[in-house]
Image 1 (tube, rainbow, N blue to C red):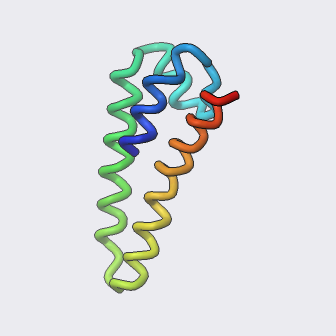
Image 2 (cartoon, rainbow, N blue to C red; image 1 turned 45 degrees about the horizontal axis):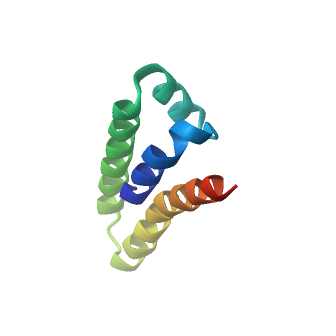
Length: 83
């Protein structure tokens, strides 16, 4: 999620290609601070959900799945930057 936030901060103001309507409205209304806050809250919520999984093997794969959202956001930002 950190890489997603950094690439968003570097790329978005010049491109304006955010596909997530929550981030789009947040950035338009409050700037980068709200985007960072939303990402911190999302990361915290995902960590709490992963910790609720009792089986260690399932917890591992749940953590991988949760981390993939940040990775996909990062790759999407890089793709938008290169376009």
